[in-house]
Image 1: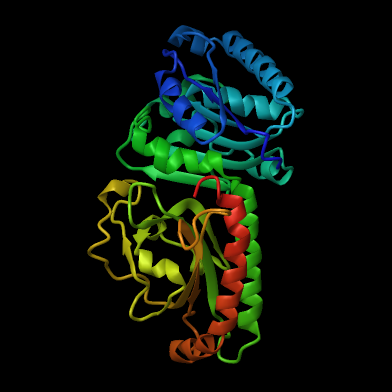
Image 2: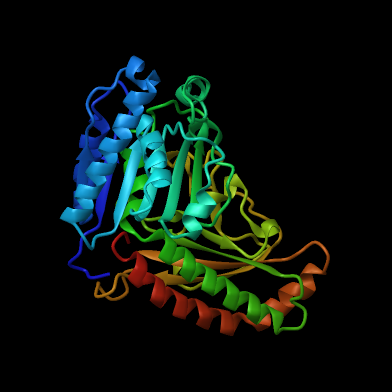
Length: 374
């Protein structure tokens, strides 16, 4: 994309509010070089919410507003952050108006149907990436699904669809508006908006295919699985954290459990170190992955015992200070349950030079995709 073209981020509030959170996140959006567009359809009360003609009117209003944004910024990628009724309006807009294409759709407090056909939308490239933030104590999706035709419980139950470009984050204690806090904005939402998630996932997928093909050439590595993930270094900390949702696995058995998804990693591991397991990959897994502030990287605990080896490569900002590591990409090789793990580990060890070379090339490409955030 032309560096002179700034991405646009539309924010859209819910019912019985004028969207105070939109004013809070707007300066943060602008800080990262994006253009915030705060849409306000006025105070929408509960009786209007129950009125289908009133809801239809807001969908038409949103269509006109988005069309104006596209006219104002004709070449800019457009993302939408929506809450509550805003998610319903955006979902209907995507269904009913095929003239628009969006970079990222981010939902919180969603009252969209859980069976919404995101796979069709994503495969058609009408939306490149979807992030749904689930709050288990949210009562409004439950209520909306009962009283509003076409509404659903995606904000409390999540979407049924599964796709590499559909990311869902669950907080077991949050309610309808509890995601509105500085931690969420900085750690969970802005990473999804600053960087092209689809481009990173495509790059990670290529890396995974190359690693799997390499494993297939070595005797003793039959059955080995692989997974890759991207880490970044928050500006105020010394540790690295996984970029939310930026992971790909070769098989379902190699996918991460929820407890593995969010953890910090020591800076030393970002210097291309090889960690053979056991001992386990040097990371501190979080007992409450949705609450990143609770992570204690000074007391790492045991990871998955089936991880044979991990190869990490550092990421630096193009044109930045030499040697300044701001992120990393990690490739992990896992044993299966059929073949002998010791034999697989030996086979993988013979491939480490090629795996290091692969990771070095991948990190060079990834830093151009993720440099705006890193």
